Structure formats: C-alpha cells, structure tokens
Image 1 (cartoon, rainbow, N blue to C red):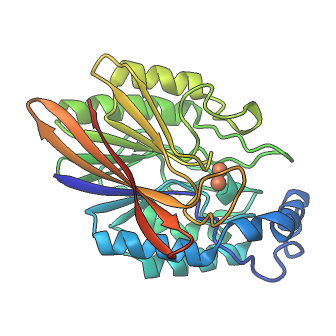
Image 2: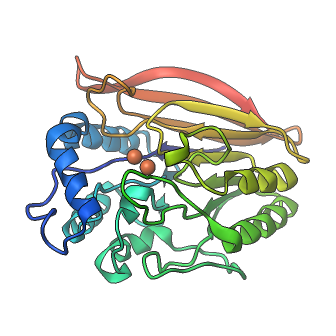
Length: 306
Ligand SMILES: [Fe+2]
Ligand SMILES: [Fe+2]
C-alpha cells in the first residue's frame, strides 16, 4: 500500500508589498488589482496552513502539489513559497509541477521557479526532456517510490491578458508516451501530475490545456493509473478507457479557499494505491476544510480500479 496526498492551487498570500510595481508587467499589475479587490478574501493563508498540517498529521508516503502556488509570479512570492514549502516538508517527499499562475508573466528561472527546483527533481534518467528560460528544470521528471512512479509534466506557460491556458508541447508529450510505456512494462503504478485538466472539454477555452486532445491520445494509447490536476478549483473525477485499462483523472479544489460563491472550500485528496489480483486499486479519501470548527474533516470516500 502506497499513500499519496494531492493538493493544489495554494495561491499563497498575502501578496508582497510592491508586487505590482517592481519589474512591471501589465498582466501582473492587473492581477495584483484583482487580488486586492477579490481574491485576497477567497484565498486564506490560515486555511492553506490547516490543510498542510492535516496532511502532515496523516503522514502519507508522498505529496503531489499540482501548481499555482503563487498568484502573479512576483519575485518575492517565490521566496515566500520556498519558505512555506520548507516548513511543509522535505523536497524528496513533495513533488511540484508549475501552474499558469507560477508562470503568470515572463520571469527568469533564477528569479522565479528556481526557488522550487528541489521539488521538481526526478530520480530517473529521462532521455527526452524540455527546459525553458522560465522552467529550466527538465520536464517530464520521474520519481520512483516503491512500486509507484510519479511523473511530473509542466503545462505552465506565460499567457496574454485574460487567458490562463496551458501547453505541454511536442517534446513533453512524446517523452510522456515513452515513459508511460516503459514504466508500465516495469510494473509501476503510473501517476501523472499536471496543473491543467488533461482532457478536452474540462476547462473553458480561455483556460484550457491547448494540447489536451493530443494528451488524451497519449493516455488512451499508453494508459496511466491516475492523472492528478488542479486549475479549475473544483472536485473533479473523469475516467477514460485506454488499451491498458481505465485512466482516472482527478482534480482537487484550491487548498486555500475559505469562502467563494463559485468554488468549493479547500480540500485535499488522499490516495491509497495497492496492487491486487493483477489490478491497481486506489481508495480515495477527500478531506475538506470546515469553517465552523476551523478543522479539516472527512468529506467522502470511494474506490477506483484500473
Ligand atoms: Fe489556481
Ligand atoms: Fe491554474
């Protein structure tokens, strides 16, 4: 039995002073305005802390954090995020993939996502990887933990105003196909981590993964036991068929939402993954923040089979 915690979209606040003005970018300035008017009421650092502490108490074997740890990709936000992560747990226990807010505007690697690099380091040689000026860690990366392979892909790319799309690109898609095939043959349960919902139609066009149709094709062709995502700030479960069994695609709400008319309150998923009679079985427990008691409490449980 392997236990895996899944949280996403921490959107850590408060925004550091000067986020709008230093290293000015119009998209970031508007994002700061949006934060000050709306989002600061929705995303609570205290709720994020309660979720993190609940995960620490349950002591899973590993943690998947599927992006949007910051808000407007201000340099100081990444410094704060790396401190937050250091308090949360060690880099070999937490795997991170970037979201659109982590790539909100163009930020050089050393001023941005470099601060989270230890959480994006694979431990298996991957022959075909992509690096960019913004995400200079090689993607996909793979972490092997007992009989589970965690595969991180990066869909975060800077977007024009009012867009929050993501893209993997040909290199990552091609590499992912090889990895899924290789890791299946070697008997691993394959868990893919991506920020954007990976299938067509799961997000509005202005927020969608551009190459979702191609990714769906890769998943159908090669299979995967679980695909974990964030971005929509919703509880989501979608299952597709593949040549090698069911592929379960799960999304979690933002891990810091305290009150929002449009989205559920903060939650995280716990997966208990085990091999039984030639199949992979995953028991899913969803735990959600309760504003009245300020505790994280059980919400629901169900089982998945691949
Ligand atoms: Fe988000
Ligand atoms: Fe997002």
